[in-house]
Figure 1 (cartoon, helix red, strand yellow):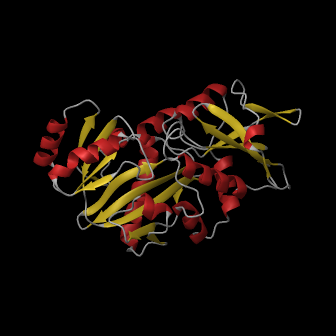
Figure 2 (cartoon, helix red, strand yellow):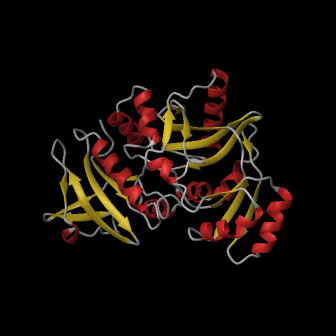
Length: 338
């Protein structure tokens, strides 16, 4: 017997990732078991939350024209549909970026007492910021961390460049601390290119890090709670014809994802243990994906994704398929155990 009947899938965001978020949310909504749950798609952007589509049990999806979309009542997380008040019992959060990954949506849901799929507001806020997350988990001995330099908008650019030059080795990756999908990221090979890279990163947020590049193989591992324990999915190695795994590589077919990753059993176990350790250290729930670089001297942490992509081209659906798990069953596991 399912805990919930009416599921709201929230997608859209206030950042550059909003279109990817819509694709993730729509794929998630169509993949949720329609024989068990009613699914309602909530498009949320810049504070305007509206019902974009819905699917009753054992029925076809109904899309609502943009001009006719009813507003979500945020006082109790409900909507009026054809004269009936629909109270959502559970939220599957698929908002990449602000406000879905930094804890704001989670805080709203927590205040209302609505259960949801992702980590709580505190964990989301810590993990969403790359610098804060590294600082929070840097005492874990199961993974290494590349050195970095932190800078806030308004700080001296000259001082930032000088510190990067004196403490890091090129190439370095300059990136906003609170973004995703590689927006605002630049691979910098020489000092004179740092100011432009910094300006680009600041277009996505007010805090930035320059992180020393680590040469190795890019890998990723996802973990979730299955009702008994934290378990991991088959790992993926990512190769790309681009210089790194940027937006073009992620979403425009300029990469190759090999699943399961062609690594040794020992390397696979190390990554699985590191992912479980990070999951438990942060206090995660639901589905989380952690990205790494496997270098000659060990496994390096890149970032944690608390709301990993769920488009048709995304990594987690590929992992789920490789594991031999039906995607609807997988989503039901997340819903019933988060």
